[in-house]
Length: 188
Image 1 (cartoon, rainbow, N blue to C red):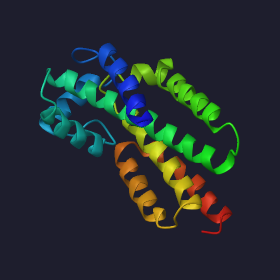
Image 2: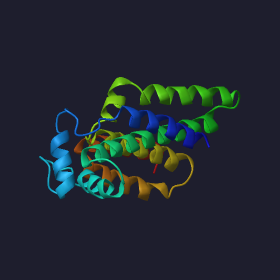
Image 3: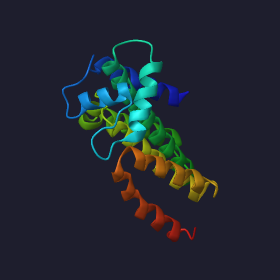
């Protein structure tokens, strides 16, 4: 229930603040165009993001296409908040023995501070691939933690999500040394 509340808190706030059409921010117009026609953006092309906004831009039933892909950014930013809170909860369950409720409340407000921090908030309102990238980064960190602490089978999902993340933005490749180091540290 708390995950749904967190998602709705962030998503509805982002939705309220979202630009009603294409935002006057960097490549928003280009992404709206390539998402609408399923084209290719400037290098590296952002193929996964283009495909996602093409599909979700046709599924979301209201608003113009620019507003629809702004909503996609809102959705992925709210999902990032939920994933980070879930990671925080897993860490609390593993390492904290007393006052778990206090730490959960503290984590909830820390995630809200992250979500409503200026950069995350602003990028959640525009049609850019950055919130999709933070979504992938948070999933990669979560899966790395789950691999080490819950189940060794998460490594397959971890590298699959890692590869998908690279198709969104190439800077996800910077997670690779950290993943390899953590695998070596915990002896795979």
